[in-house]
Structures are given as C-alpha cells and as structure tokens.
Amino acid sequence: MKQITKEVFFIPGQDDMIPDSHVYLIGNPSSKDLSLVDAGLMGKGKYKIESIQGLGFELTDVKRVIMTHTHLDHIGCLGEILEAVPNAELWVHTHEAELLEQGDERAVYGMDMFQSMCQAQYGIRPGAFKFRVDRKLEGGDTLDLGGTEWEVLHIPGHSAGSIGLYNRHDKILIPGDTVYADYAIGRFDLYGANGAQLKESLLGLAELEVDILLPGHNRIVGAVPAGYILETAKQWGPYLS
Ligand SMILES: [Zn+2]
Ligand SMILES: [Zn+2]
Image (cartoon, rainbow, N blue to C red; front, side):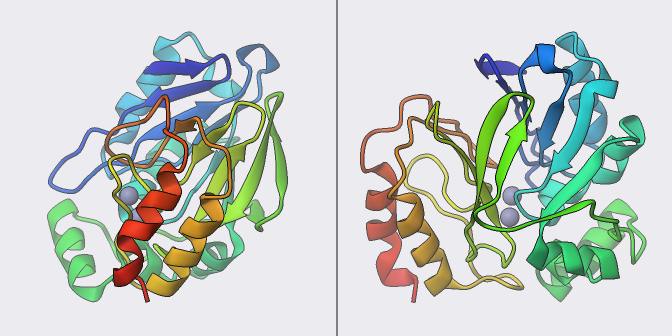
C-alpha cells in the first residue's frame, strides 16, 4: 500500500497467470467514507483487505466499490471483498451494470475460450458474477468520495462500460485499462470493445490536465508529462479504426 496523496492510496495488484488489477482507496481518512476502485483477480481479495487494515483503516469505513469496468482481472475477487465489507455498495457504469445484474458474463470473460479456461483453472461456477448494482454510473456524474470530488468519464473502447475517474483539483486520472504508463493502451478485441471508440476516448482524456496517472495495471505515474495521453492516442491511432 502506498499513499499517493492525502486522500488516495494505492494497493498494487499481485499478478498471477492472469494479471490482477491494482486497487485504489479514495477518501479523506477522517471522513470515514472510503471508496475502493476495482477489486482484482480471484483469490486476491484477502491481501487487499489486509492492506487496508494494515494502514489502520476500519473496514466498516469502506462504503462502496466502484468498478472501472467488469473484466475478470478487476471483478474476480469482488465477492471476497464484499464479504469482508458487507455493507459496501457496488457502483458500475450502466452498460456493464445491466449485464452484471442479469448474470450475463460476456463482459467479465471477454471471450468464450477464456471463459472455459478460467472456469476450469480457478474452479469458477457459471453465474458466479451476478451482482446487484447499487448505483449505475453515467458519464458526467460527479461523485463526492470522502471529501474529494471525482468526475465520472465514460470512456468506452476497452469495454463498453469502461469509466475513468478524474479529480480535477489534484489532476489525478484513474483510467482503468484504457491507458497505461509507457504509451500502452488497453486491448480492444474483447466482447464490447471497439477500437474507434477507444481512440475517441483517448482523445477525450487527452484534453484533461493530468499530473498523476493511476491505471489498472503496471506502473503508476506520479509526474505525467504534458501531452502524454495525446501522444499515446497518436501512436495508436493507425490501429484504432
Ligand atoms: Zn480490462
Ligand atoms: Zn485489467
């Protein structure tokens, strides 16, 4: 667990055969209103919960889990985490919330072959990823998370219901798997993905002032160079149509 700002904490993913998403904990500790962003891969909930406790946070202060999107590497241990924080709400963008509520797992696994492989490998039963969603997010929503303000950006392309969370005050962007450090972007070949939309989403993000980039995987960036996302969009542009 690493402290990024007074109100944002970083719990790095522990990659397995499949990547495990990073988790971010948001909120002023004194507010007792903490939010987790994403959960992670199956079996990776316990150490994330322990990381939260390790910093002296009370689990009862975790009020919600906000998903940047619902791929398996982000939602795999959501059940484990919600067991530890049973009163936490689940907030997901409308496009993927509706699938989750119906138990439609196409967005979770992304492709049929991956579904059968993961179900066998991890012993996951079909229908394991049916959840009630307490709040369906939309682009343009403003969230007050423990005394900090975040804008919800709908950034489809990597998946249909991908969102970014943007803190304009501290210029922090949590883009899920849409853009990473080192000019990398999320894949755009899975269920609900769309290269042209991903390009539009990147160009939209490029208009934001971003100092701190907190992606779903790999390196986090504490001093983002100006124009970084635009340059990334340009480099990938020819492949995104
Ligand atoms: Zn993803
Ligand atoms: Zn991911």
